[in-house]
Length: 156
Image 1 (cartoon, rainbow, N blue to C red):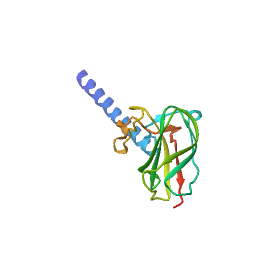
Image 2: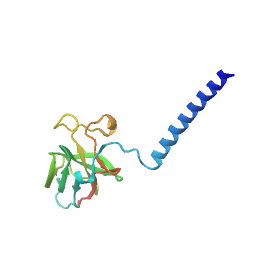
Image 3: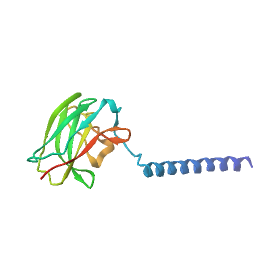
Image 4: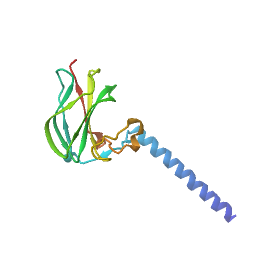
C-alpha cells in the first residue's frame, strides 16, 4: 500500500510540474514577456532619432547614450518589425550627438527601425543574427520590456 502512495505522490508532483510549466509559457506568450536581450536601466541608455528627409543614403541620429560600447543598427521596416539590416555603426560608451549612420543600400520602405545593440562578443565585430538570436552576443538593449529602438519615417 505504501508503494502505491509513493507512486501516486510522484505522479501528482510530475503532473503539477508539467501543468505549471505549460501555464507559465502560455502566460508569457499572452503577455508578450518572451523578451531576451541586454536589460539596462532607463537612465543609462537613450536613443533619439527624428523623421528623415534627404537623399536616403544615411540616417541621422540626434542623440545616443550608450551604456557600453554598442552598435547603432538600421533595419528596413517589415510590418513594424526589424527587417533586413541596411546600416551599422559602432559607438563607444557614453553620450553622442549628431551621429550619422551610412546606409549600405537605398531605403525601400517608408520607415526604418533604428535600434541600439550591445557589443558583447568580439569587440568591434557585429555578431547578431535574427535567425540565431539566442546564440548572438550582440543583442539589443531593453528597458522595462521595451527594446531601445525607434521607428523613423524616411522621405523617398
